[in-house]
Image 1 (cartoon, rainbow, N blue to C red):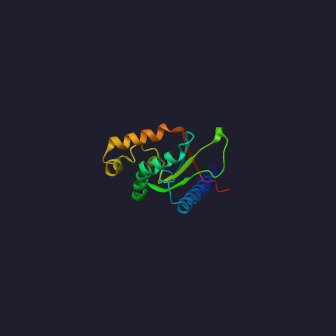
Image 2 (image 1 turned 180 degrees about the vertical axis):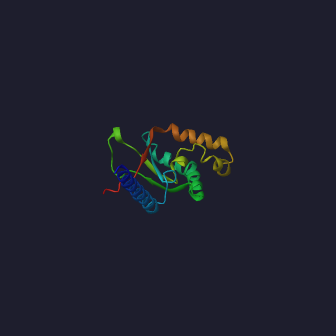
Image 3 (image 1 turned 90 degrees about the vertical axis):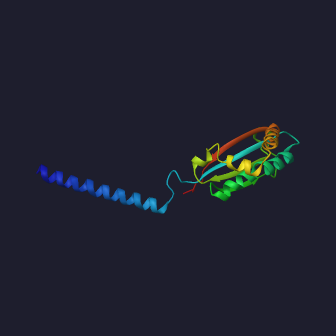
Length: 154
């Protein structure tokens, strides 16, 4: 009797394992991206000192955006979008420029040297570029980065 129960128990365990592994295969095939390959989205918010918003945006477009576009061309970045608010916002939550960057994966988003290969290529005068970038950050009164994820709402 014990052998029969053990055989039935073993059969149930094997059937459960087969069903579980089948579900895992189905889940993987419906989502071909693995955890290390999933897109990773970051929103960068910039609050600029009053009266310097246009200057900041011009500096950002001249000194940082070309680097991001190189990473986009290489495929490390999937998309780059920028936004400005249309209406006034209270000072405590005010931002002047938002850049949304979708990286190919989280590792690339946190790679501090991702843009380094393009800096020398695009900006041969490294001192001038460093000074322009320093000024871009001097006219900020706040900057924060937010990791965002899509919510499928179902």
